Image (cartoon, rainbow, N blue to C red; front, side, top):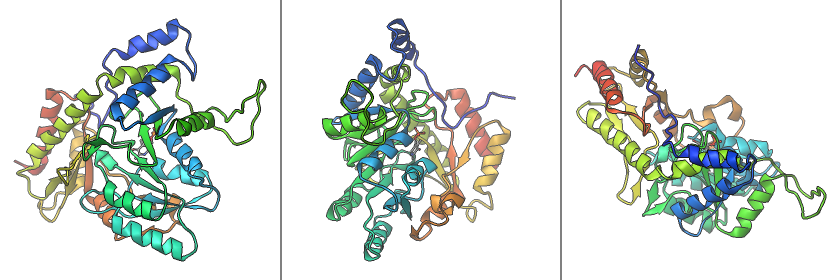
Length: 379
Ligand SMILES: *Cc1c(COP(=O)(O)O)cnc(C)c1O
């Protein structure tokens, strides 16, 4: 059997080890130290826009601390894109608040501005103004930032921009993650770059960053002893992990180009296969990092071949592929939460497939993937 080809696996450059070794040599083996400060600086110069970064133990932790700072508490409501990974929704539930799930639109696959408007207006008419809007750049594809943020601003609702999958994606030449009141990044093992596990909150003032770090380190008040006035969390990134992150920052731009090339590779394969559409940029104003390349299979046009047929054929050749995120409003976890929309994301879920997209795939991997796909479509 050939080696397994993964959807998106960690891709180390080698220089990560130098930063990790420095941490060992200087005994900064703790959730504090020079790699954390260095990694935060690297991210700030990468994202620009006067961002202030708080490095955290996960993207989920970043969403949690954004919600805390947006003032979300028990019985509050938070608008959330339904079509996402569970990590977008879970922190709302940690706080005893209710996610109000909103459908996607066809061109971005992300939060639908119309369904968003309907949801917010309906909740306000029921006497519950949402405390925050959580929108996601799913698979690296930017959501309609101008429309969504203008609407949020008109209603004075803070936006948390879940950019966990979109590091390096751009909207009108500006990096995703820098537009919201808070931005969320993830460095999990399967993302564009990894720290083995980690995340960051993108803030727009030093005060917000300091507050985030304060909350992430048990909310300890100024005093010689341990003094606490509010609930804290243990969410800071380790200095070892941050060392991996510093090494990864050196190759981030290169890795994004490689993922974008994987997308072109699939566009090329599927351009002559009727009934299969590869997701691509919906406007010249945006660029996706193409964290994952995703396709939609319309079995009424492929002669009955479904995305499941393709998934199983790839699996038989030891190639990983995966259905898209199952919408959160279809999850048993969320069955009691309201949903607004027209089932666009349900159709995407039924027909979509994520294909191997890592920056570490080589020519041999690509030729195996291509022949496995072509076998299914008998070209
Ligand atoms: C990965 C991911 C997260 C969470 O990040 P972790 O670092 O794994 O906690 C949040 N939202 C989306 C959309 C993600 O893909």
